[in-house]
Image 1: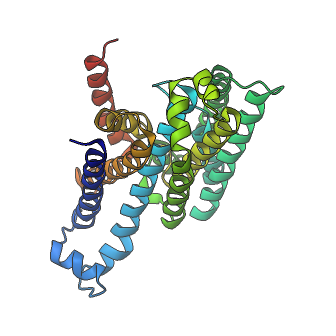
Image 2 (image 1 turned 45 degrees about the vertical axis):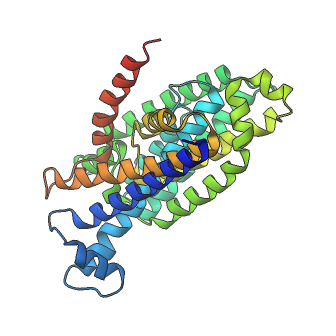
Amino acid sequence: MPTRRRAFLILLGLSLLALLSIGLALMAGSLKVPPGEVLAALLGQAGGSGDIVLQLRLPRALAGFACGGLLALAGALMQVLLRNPLADPYVLGISGGAGVGAMFGMLLGLSVFGIDSLAFAGAFAAMLLVFGLAHGDGSWTQTRLLLTGVIVAAGCGALVALMLTIADEHKLRGMLFWLMGDLGQSGQWWPALLTLAVALLCAMPFARELNLLARGLLQAQALGVSVGRLRYAIYLLASLATAASVTTAGSIGFVGLIVPHLVRLATGNDQRVLLPATVLAGGSLLVLADTLARTLIAPQQLPVGVLTALIGVPVFLFLLSRQPR
């Protein structure tokens, strides 16, 4: 099968999977909505369950797809930037900074908008801190960036633990759900979806340079790639994508680590196909995981981050067993 045809079929299949996952999210729940009523609600012919579909489930499904796509895209970019298969969106402390901001907002009793604003501010501050410390005197290596991110993440984790210790008991449940990832508390869905579209559109023109960078720093420089500019762009895009996702849904693990590996097995390492395929696969996975989180023990809901971890651990172990080297 020709390479272009194979890539087209993979992207088409993942697009259909994304639509099916969102459709399932609109139908499933403590109140099951038939497909006909879902379609009628989407067409503006709202019936008795139209408000549930349009006001509750559709915004949550779109937010889940956007966050999953952002995490998967950030993970794919981070793995190229650091040339490390274990790199994920949270490795540079962005999630820790957002967690500090969100926990502080919850301690103050702020509204959802205030918590989201502080979470984004914390993520942005962590991004600037890691970048500034890793850049140092102008030298910037993958190892230095990774070590700086790990240290900043550890410091943020200590601050989060301190705030959990001093928080009132009636606030602990909400704080723990945010830390484990929870789409039920997501406010607006459109900022994350808009960020996803902008991040993907900004990353695609660099796909050829990313292919060269994945082969090695020296080889990319020899072939005319402006490595310094490219690494700054990757770091900024991945950090903003992670910040937008964490601000919307909290810390959701394993999506940014597992999805790029799974997609790479099907598409290869061509970033022109890998990046959009990763976005579609990551968004679909998180929507399906959130649907399970809402329905497994309905009407009680589980944190979606717990399910992504339960799915991600055996999948990653399976991948390691297939490629022991």
